[in-house]
Length: 385
Ligand SMILES: Nc1nc2c(ncn2[C@@H]2O[C@H](COP(=O)(O)OP(=O)(O)OP(=O)(O)O)[C@@H](O)[C@H]2O)c(=O)[nH]1
Ligand SMILES: [Mg+2]
Image (cartoon, rainbow, N blue to C red; front, side, top):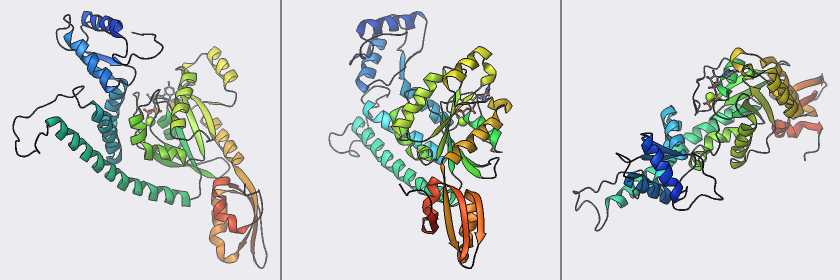
C-alpha cells in the first residue's frame, strides 16, 4: 500500500487512519507481518506495534518490520567472513540500541538476580549496558581486522597496478563480471547482497598493462545508514580505487539504480571518482530498449556478463579510461635503481627507453596516482598540480 504525504507522521509514520486501514487489510489477508519500506523511528515502531496488536480483527499481533531490519536480516544471513559477520553485528547492535524499550524486543524482566545487579537496575538497563559493551568489543575486533586489510592494500599498492572497483546496485551482475573477466571463483546468485566481502583479482588488459579489479558489496536504494557505517572499511576499497566500473542491471529501471548508487557513493565520499557505466543483462532487452539506452548513455558499455557478451568492449573501454588517467613523463633513473625501471614497465606504458653513462632515460605514461613514487626522477612532465 502506498500513502502520499508531505512527510511521514511522527507518531505512526502513515497517519492513524491509514494505519488502521493497513492493519485491517492485513487481517483480512491473514498476513503475519507488515514491512515498511523506510526506517521507522523507535517511537513509530512502538506505536505501530501497539495499534496492530490491539486490532480486534487480528487473531494474533502482527509482526512489524522496517526496511532497515529486513536488510540487516539479509546481510546477517549472507555474512561469511569474520569481518563481514562483525560488520553486520555492529549494524544490528546500533539499530537495536535505541529500540530496546519494547519495540522489536521481548523484554524479559528476570525475577532473579537480586544482588547481582546494582540497586534499582532493571533488566532493560542491564541489557543496554550489555549491548554497549558488545559494541565496544566488536569495534575493537573490527579495528584489528582493518589493520590486516590495510597491510593487504599496501602490498597491492606496491604492485603499482591501479585498482578498479566494481560498484552497482545489488544483483546487477558485478560478481558475474568479475568471474567473466578473471578466474575469480566468486559467488554469483540471484538474490540480494550475495557479496559482502571484497574480492580482488588481477586483470590483464589488451595493451599489456594490468589492473586490480575489486568486487564488493552491492548498493540499494536507501541503504541503511547503520550498514554504511559498519561497512565503512569495506566500502573504503571503493574510495581507494582509481576508477569505478558502475554495473547496472539494464533490464530493471537503470536510471533509478544509477541514482541510488550515486547516493551511496556520495555518502562514502566517493563521488569524485571517474566512473565507467556498464549496462549489463542486455540479453533481457529489446532492440527498442537498447536504442533508448544508447541515446541516454552514449559512453556506456553494453554487456551480458552471463554469456560473456560485450566483455571485449569492456576491456577496451577500460584501457581507454585508464590511459586517460595516465600522464606522460620523462624519467631519468640511475643504474642502481633498476627496480624502478622494472616498475615503470610493470605499471605504465613505456614510450621510449635509452641509456647513457648515468642511467636510463624513459618516456612513459604512468597513472597519476602512482606518480609520487617516481617523483624524484621526473625530469619533465606534467605540472605537479
Ligand atoms: N540475464 C542475465 N542475467 C545475468 C547477467 N549477469 C548476471 N546475471 C544474473 O544476475 C544475478 C546476480 O548476479 P551477481 O553477479 O551475483 O550480481 P552482484 O551484482 O554481484 O550482486 P550482489 O553481490 O548480490 O550485490 C545472477 O543470477 C546472475 O546469473 C546477464 O548478463 N544476463
Ligand atoms: Mg556479488
